[in-house]
Length: 350
Image 1 (cartoon, rainbow, N blue to C red):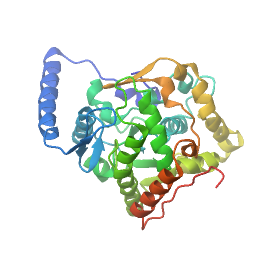
Image 2 (cartoon, helix red, strand yellow; image 1 turned 90 degrees about the horizontal axis):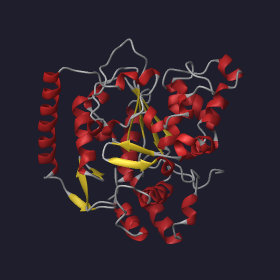
Image 3 (cartoon, helix red, strand yellow; image 1 turned 30 degrees about the vertical axis):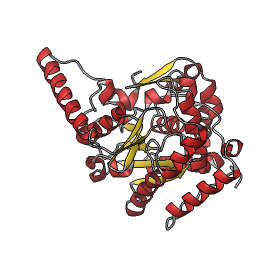
Image 4 (cartoon, rainbow, N blue to C red; image 1 turned 135 degrees about the vertical axis):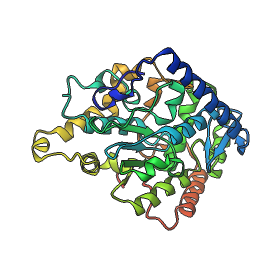
């Protein structure tokens, strides 16, 4: 992984003596053995790219390695009050929001000609918490003198480390219309270098509707953070992909204010908000050489960097789902999100 500048410098593991390394290796192996015992007892369901999905704490995971990473995160991550945690269900604008948040939090250190996003993937700049275990990177110690840290996870609220729940760190949660999420996720898995998707489009849709999808059921994922926002609105911010597409300037400033780094009137006059939006736009990121070639390695996953950029459109599901499929998902969304003020637009112009 490329070392992130500024606030992410602490992520680089330090050197240690032989005895300490040997002890760390021994501790990791004991952890793996314990994780394997836990996983052997978990419910299983037909997988999308693997033989099985595994259910841990009510959430379905694509691989056992993913569950190991979540448990390790639960046991070892120590947040600071100033930390920011970006949470997204898969294929809900993760790459885009990683870039936006990184640019907001590091805007005083770089200009548009020296910005790390020009040479480094957003996924390398903002680490994926579940992958730390498999990349042999220890979580950074909570040094109160270092800048705020930015992390990302797909983990549902019910499986976040208790240390996060008990802390004052800020959580930015992004959701996206489940119809677009399904289409984007299926297309992404078709290009997966690690294993071919095992299900047809129709079979995957059936599993998705039943809640059997990686990090699903999608309605539980959304509801978990909606409830957290209702309880701690000062700590959990809910955002929609579609809203960000419709009015990027308003919501970018909203994010900055929420994480305690609001744009000054002078920064706004200088056009900094617009510069960040332009730098992090789909068109800009997808055309950068660093995102067009090469692969990104995250633990057990090796992904072509260009696979993170397909269309980035609102309402692309209309080109893939039948009217019957769309109606079925609409009913599932309405039924499972009943009682909360969560609805999804089918057009960016809505």
